[in-house]
Length: 327
Image (cartoon, rainbow, N blue to C red):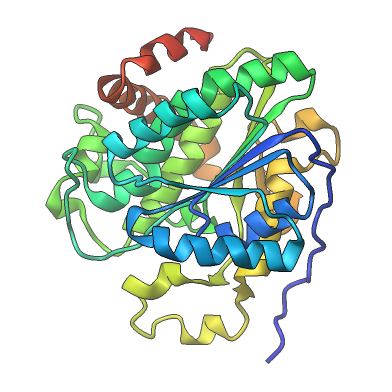
């Protein structure tokens, strides 16, 4: 059966001289996005994968070169389930990144129904899909802003979320105001089939908050992205046949990756239209009603403050980076 969704085109941009980073690029959406970026001839393309996937990374690197002709892909290890790994990645980037970073696609994610805690004390899906990416974003923020100032071209941070964020909200008895949202999500009895959707809502709230806490004219644009329902390895831990009908019309990971590229490089309607925006089905769309509500905005600030505190505790460099925020 042919997909019923439009076959959106791939945005083409000349990336000559620029440095791009794709987090979670060994398979699926990230791998396809890395291939699209490789065709745009960046000066550097850094692609990350988990430690146990490093052997496969060499094969993926060869595949990118074969398909695109671009042979300068750098494969760096990164485990978002480990703050130590994220800090080691940031250390390496300080040494080897050349002081430049133009484009980041924050893509890595996992989906699990089973409860497990990371070495840092947080539920693993929560840390992988939100806290790890937030810590990395905070650590890369100074270089992203420095690059924007020096080049005169805004840097881009694209956070891959999901339209599923609209199916959940952080209100009511499950998330009382006198208890931290992140702490609550790390408790075993909070774990249910909504966990992936909850982390995708955290992506939305974090992306909106990060943009809002930067100066209005900051040379960094943060955009959150819904790639659509795709046939990917993300399903491998949770697919129990419940999506069989949806899979008949799902996007391929290559088709979904086109949304990642547009979210990271798009300028249609003026570059500032993408500042703190949300991309879905090839166009910028308003956020869901709850996110835009007074309650949603208040929760967004709670999530922002809790996440920033956790990042600062994980790495003292974040406290210095936080001085770049207006409030």
